[in-house]
Every structure is written in structure tokens, then in C-alpha cells.
Image 1 (tube, rainbow, N blue to C red):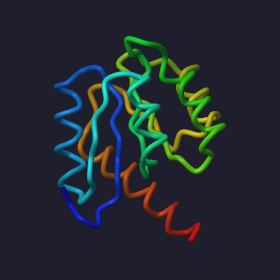
Image 2 (image 1 turned 135 degrees about the vertical axis):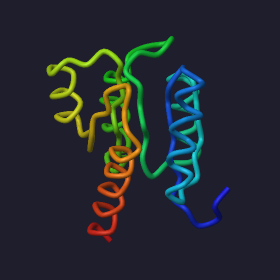
Image 3 (image 1 turned 60 degrees about the vertical axis):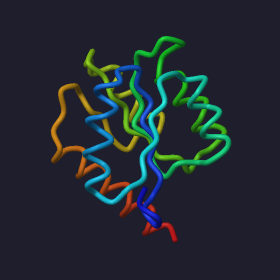
Length: 128
């Protein structure tokens, strides 16, 4: 755990993907929590609002895009990056319209994750 690093949440039911993305983010100086369902994620968000959420679209208890809409209504300052292995332009546009700062198609690169994290940090710093 990095004492002063920002708090990032990953919502994905693929444990190996969570491990990989957590490692990528940890090297960038952030604290990471992984959850594997939308219900679990909602409880975490209500208790400790993360700085940014990496959100898979296909989860056992629903679609990330629907969860995104709900959470952005309740917590408009939350930042989201949508993750999917089922890319389609319509989903990407909907996610961006709903307020995602980025979109990751599986497989994704360390460079792209770094860029999205940096963008989120710059946006947060400009709103202080």
C-alpha cells in the first residue's frame, strides 16, 4: 500500500486481468482495490470513493455501462475507464457520452493505462 497514492478501483470478474492491471497501476504509485462484481463495487464506492475506476462491461451481475450511468448520477466526480474484450464503436461512444475518460480494449498496453491514469490526474489537479 502506498500511503499517499491515489485510490483506484478495478471492477472485473477476471482475476488474472485484475492482477495484471493492479501491477501496472501500482508501478505508477497508486493504491489499488479489485472487486469482481457490480454489487461488491457499489458497496466499496459508497464507503470509499476511489479516484478512478477501471470498469469491465461484462460482469456476472450486469453490464458495466448500466452501472456507469447509475454511479455517474450519484457520484458525478468519479472518473471511469471502460474495459471490454467485446469492442464495438457504439459501446465506446455510449461510455464516453456517459462520462468515461477513456476506453480500453482487451488486450491493452501498459502505455495506454499510464496515459489514462495521467489524464485523470491532470483533470483532477485542474479542478482544485
